[in-house]
Each structure stands twice: as structure tokens, then as C-alpha cells.
Amino acid sequence: MPISDFHGNSDIVRTIREMLARDRFPHAVILSGPPGSGKFTLAQMIAKTMNCLERPTTDALPDFCGRCANCVRIAEADNLEDRFAEAVEARENLREADKRETRIFVQTHPDVLIIPPDPPQMLVKVDQVRHVIGEIYYRPSEGRERVHIFSDADFMKEAANSLLKVLEEPPEFATIFLLSDNPSALLPTIRSRCMQIRLAPLSPPEIEDYLAEMRPDWKARERGLVARLCGGGLGRARSFDLTQYLTARQDALALLAPAMGARDHSELFKVTETYRAGADGKSKMDSTIRVVYSLLEDLLFVKSGTSEMVRNQDIQGELRRMAEQVDFEWIAGGSQKLGELETGMRRNLLRSLALDAYATALEAGWAEGSRV
Ligand SMILES: [Zn+2]
Image 1 (cartoon, rainbow, N blue to C red):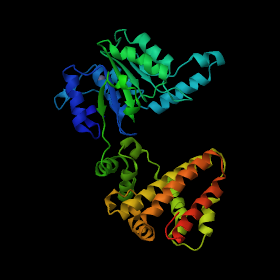
Image 2 (cartoon, protein in one colour):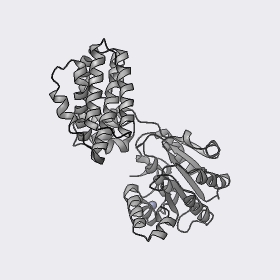
Image 3 (cartoon, rainbow, N blue to C red):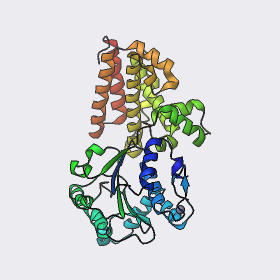
Image 4 (spheres, rainbow, N blue to C red):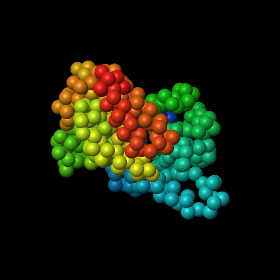
């Protein structure tokens, strides 16, 4: 897929390509946007366009061929998750002493270096930045531009301070990308030395169009739902686990049911007893809590007359019926109690009991004139 086919944010992509055409692309860039908005994909495309041996143009602007030796080797890192897992595994297999000295990098082309956050803390460490400083001043060996991509710019303090030195005066043949979901968390001194490019979240209709192409196996209704649940990021939309979401939503609705007047609690207990100890139980609990939040938020949208904001559009009718049962105060109380439930989970409360207690508190709130 050439850079001209990058989905969404077409004005930004055009500006980037115009800068590349005039050889005016900045040396330090913060590329930000919501998770799954294509920050890494775009950085890789820019790296390929800078270094492509064929240098094709589309719409009279620079693009990459995807076939030459440079494009092919840079593309080997397109699947960053797999390359990252391989690098982590390689380190795991080292001797104890070497393991401590080894930092994680992904490099499939001599002029393009990807610096992922280093596990287990998942932060960029000072040794990683020192490595960049050690090699950034060498001229590119097989391409025209040395590209450094910090795939998740979350730095340890010392690493951030070291990076400042390179950002002050990067060599003319180097480009540094800092990819971030939340650029305001970066040091102001780093931000002021970089050009900021922000990928905006895509609208649900834009995402639906994209999914119609990428996930023809999904029903239109399912695509509509995912488009509203993915937070505006295509990557997230494409890999969205709808089955898991719908299971979690079924459970979340069962938790809310007693507060909506359901007399029979056996359904509720059948659901909550499936929440067990261990890591599986934790991720199941986390996703259910997220879905309860989103349902409460949807109830707020319905009640405040902004139904077009509702994310769970496929159950609008049910949400409307639920919204008639409760008032704003009940919804606010439900969110607050959910926060307490999350805190309780960190203290290792039994999951099934904590969920029963939550459902009961919601029901009591409903019975007492909508007060939780
Ligand atoms: Zn090429």
C-alpha cells in the first residue's frame, strides 16, 4: 500500500508529502494520535518514501515503490508487534549478565532504527537513547536518510534528558520520530524542539467505509458498532474482538438488570460466578468494567438527548428503556461505585462477590428513589 493510500487524515498526509518533495521534512517530529490511528504505519511509510530507490510519484508527490531492496527491508518491521516479541525473546535467551546489558531494538534496515519501550517497565531507557546518540552521526549507508522511530515515546527521566541533547542539533541526514498517544506527557523542552503532527481520530462513517473493505466478513450492523467502539483508530477497528466485546456486554447488562427492575437474580449469579481468580479472570473483569462504564455513558447520552453519541447503537431500544428507569444521579452514583469496584480489585477482593455487591448497590439505589 503506497503512502497515497494511507487511510484518513488526507490533508496531513499531503502536507507531509509536500515537505518531502521540497526536502523540507523536519528532523524531529512528534507524531501523535489515538491508539490505532496509524502513527507507526505512517512513520514507516515516510521512512520508505525517504529511502526508496525507485522514487515513484503519485499525484505529483513523492511515494515509495514497495518493491526495491530498501522498501522491502524497511517493510520487514511493518509488523512491529512480532519483531518486538522476537527481540524480547532473544534477550530472554541470553545469559543473566548479558540480559541486563541488552536493550530492545528493532532494525531490519541499516538506516532505519526502531526503539520500542523496554520491558518490563515499558519505558524508553537511557541506554537506548545513548545507542541512538552513538550512531545518529554516521551517514546513511544504503539509503538517503537515517530514520529513528521511538514507537511509544514514554521515557524514563534520564533517557528524556539525554534525548534533549540530540534534539538540539540533529544531523541533516537524520530524522527522529516520537510516536505518542498523549504528547502532553512529554517534557515541554522536548516538545519545543520538535514539530508536532497530530493524526485526528476518524469519524464512525469513515471507519465504517474502511471496514466494509477490510472486514467484509462482518455484518453492516457489526461494522457500525465497531466503528463507534474503536476510539477513532483504524488499527483498533480492524483487530477489534467483537465476540469478546459482546460477551462482556452481555455480562454488563446482567449486572445492571436488577437495578432496571428484574426480580429474578439467578441470571445475575450465574454470570458473576464465572468471574474467577487468576489472570484470565482479571482480563475478563477489566473488559466488563470498561463495558459497564460505556453503558452508563450511553445512558447519559440518551437521557441528555444526544442519542447520536451513543456507542452501543445496536441496542438503542434497550438503552432507551433503561434510561427511563433511572435518573442522572443514579448514573453518576453507578460510575462512582464502579471506580470503587476497580480499587477493590487491586486489593484482591473476590471478583464474583465484588460484582454481586456492585449489582446490589445499583439495585438499592434504584429502589431508594434512584440513589446509589
Ligand atoms: Zn522502493
